[in-house]
Length: 303
Image (cartoon, rainbow, N blue to C red; front, side):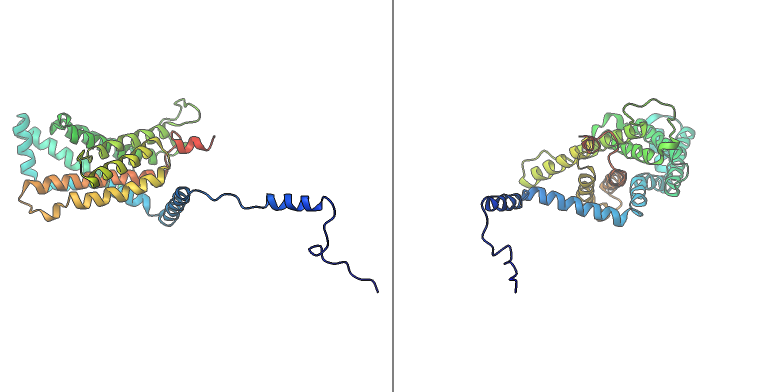
């Protein structure tokens, strides 16, 4: 009877076959592992992507609510402090009670109406332009133009509105239809860039420049994140991390509810709290929309 040949693993290797097997084994050798920092970054990006998938239907609504929160609070406050607001404008500008009343009325109605339209997602561009006008009026009327900190915060608030305006403009129905673009970059994407850059100003007002270890870490960590958002590199992860970071700082530093209402500090902290919440809303829009075409993340796809 014929004897079956031994398995190839037991047969002696013929000349040259051993070298070919060794070569194949060499090709199959495991590749060097990735650096731990790369693994950590990849895990963080996967976690951010999973968060976006779960919250994609709710995140834009939360972003809108946070973004208009400072306008909503200011409009309601003007309703309850009607006389105080009129007297302040009258005394500051000597405008007379009629013009002061008209100013407060326009501010109150403009802010409340704009908030309702944004939350209802109706006529959002007109609501944004109206809120831009409110920011401009308050910057002049309350002499914010000469206070660098408050001016930067108002500009950051305008950056959030710019992102909201960009979100409301679909590519096919742009209000800039017919405007020439460069390298297929639409005006909407330039609005996203402008919004990201203006949001940087909000964080600049939170820097302390003190020598404490934690303060230095807080400033450097936050600065790195906001620069990543501004240039559009790892944008969604950086913006989401910055949202958490700003929210924690806001709850700690601007706890207006712990201050009695009769103290002026209560109103100052309340103002800062809701302005920070509006910038958080702008960052959430960055997370939801992405950085746009004018960003390093977009250009990486072409490299």
